[in-house]
Length: 399
Image 1 (spheres, helix red, strand yellow):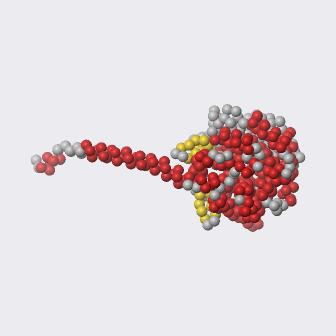
Image 2: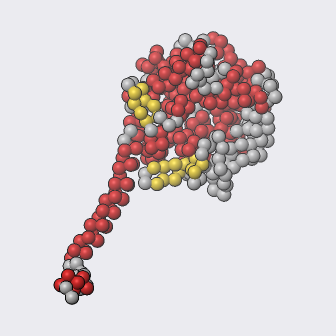
Image 3: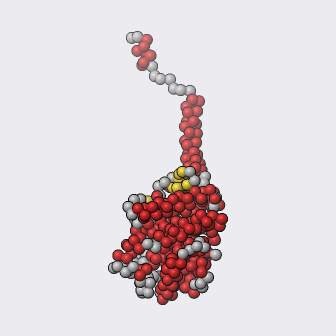
């Protein structure tokens, strides 16, 4: 038998005990370092701009505002060419123009020296939000009854709150606001005031038989800002609305508003965070105390993982897959509700909540700089318009 064969049959000698211990320690340290990196680096990277946005840093605000100015210019070019290329229509166009107007108007309120740049664009966007083609889905739902042509109707047409609020905010900040849209706004607000006061529940319908407390909060916001812009006294209708929100529209167990209701106050859906978060933003224009109450309901739905927050859509005891209002609902979390909550978090001074929510928005939104412009790449025009409105929402709205 050769020496080589004998060597192969000899058992392997164990490594010294000290070597094995050092290897185990190295593995444990490596795991701990990896966990520390996973804990620290993403939350730092995605939250690095949060404080600047919370403070309303002019360079961030102006960058996103310029992105929306470019959108309005491109939309105008599309309209003039009549090609429809790149244009938004229907409800998405309505939302994009409305939120652009609101965001730019809020920028002017926070930075009055920028008025000459942004107030005319806010007016342009607000005027576009009143275009008949943007409310076709609602006109069809009302069997051809266009809310603007039937302001004396007993029907609610609460969807008109979105262009009305945009017009009111533009009128508030633009000294050159045109007479035509001003007269249309006056007529819408008068109609809303009559309808709200006639409703014992302060609910008016968006679709036949369907009222959305969020839309009605936007109605109240439009009425309130109209009062600020014109000096009209709307205190009676706003007080009626606020009382009935608390009495009828907020679910007592969860603190969330019911997403859909009948005008009689009966629930047609669950209490949900997406409607509550957006209602808190709109209520901030009309009744700060009520808005803070709604915000508290939305914040109780916060779920936090590794410093990133998201908002759970359904109130306790309720479940669902979500819809167009909530956006995708993944593991119970709503994309829309998470974005909506940014506005009341900033407006009511919840810096920690704002930071956690912003990290999530930054992670999913992919912010990009291009010259003087800033955009969130994954949200498109609507996402950028929403974020401008929510990231610039502040206490000056309910003055």
